Image 1 (cartoon, helix red, strand yellow):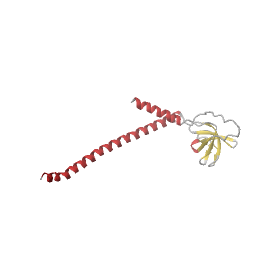
Image 2 (tube, helix red, strand yellow):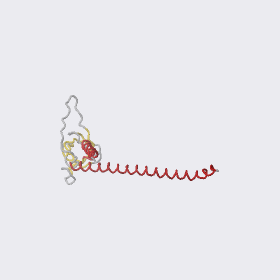
Image 3 (cartoon, helix red, strand yellow):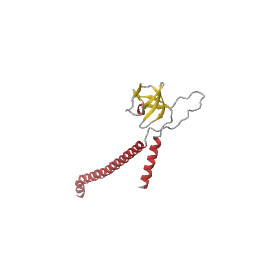
Image 4 (cartoon, one colour):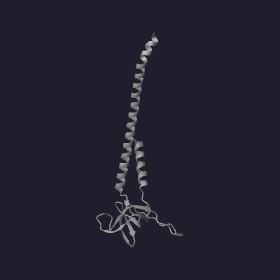
Length: 164
């Protein structure tokens, strides 16, 4: 049981490490037509729209998968699921851009929820594999017993013929 707990903790750590945010600021490319809002949510007013493939500067991440962007001379918020992120292009002979960590697009509870659902999915997958293996072994013994019985019944007349 302790080994299972250690493995589960390591899986949680690896998943949380894999969901770490990328460095900001960065570039975002709209993957679809995307509304830009005055705040991080659909309840805020629409201040603009991005066309598919349009690039914007991502300034910071906000709560619930919203990012603050800069498009043209305006600033607004866009839903990060519809943006493809890439690092800012570097100018020739310039030092690398400083990266800072803004607020993560992953809230604590969404990470916990993802970890729980992944853990349950892995556990249920292993349970299914265990039972499939058990069924395979049991069916092997049943088929083996049936074939042995059939062979003995078919060889019984030859046994008596040999006795003559």
